[in-house]
Length: 133
Image 1 (cartoon, one colour):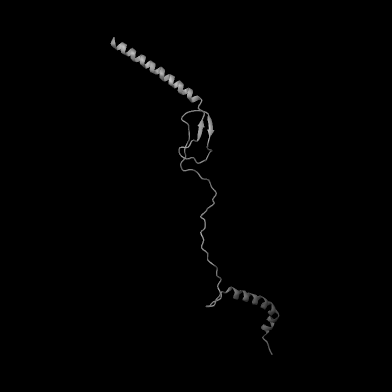
Image 2 (tube, rainbow, N blue to C red):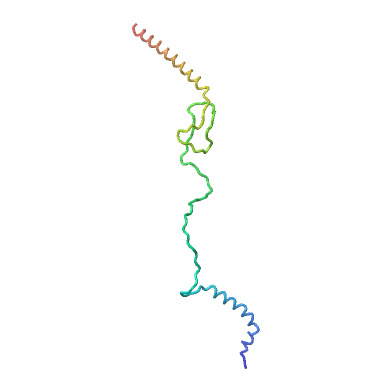
């Protein structure tokens, strides 16, 4: 039997070629999805559930509206009820001032008012006296 010399030259390399070609062909066949009406498809069960709408973000929150708190009178702070960045409802007392100086100032203002009233009465009396002359 005569063989083609080209085929005889490839015979020693045949086991090596088969060891590479067969696994490659098997992988290609496995990667091809089955076709036809009886094809097996993977399935998963669908569940309905409510997911919470929650976001966790890093950042800095700044107020759109800022309010400056200041006193219309002076005095020493006796009590601070809130800290910086605390939420305060409208009308709540934020701090208390010591009121030892205020009663003295009110008494002083009352005395000045009484003195001014007495000067007014005297000035009106003098005006009326001079007008007669």
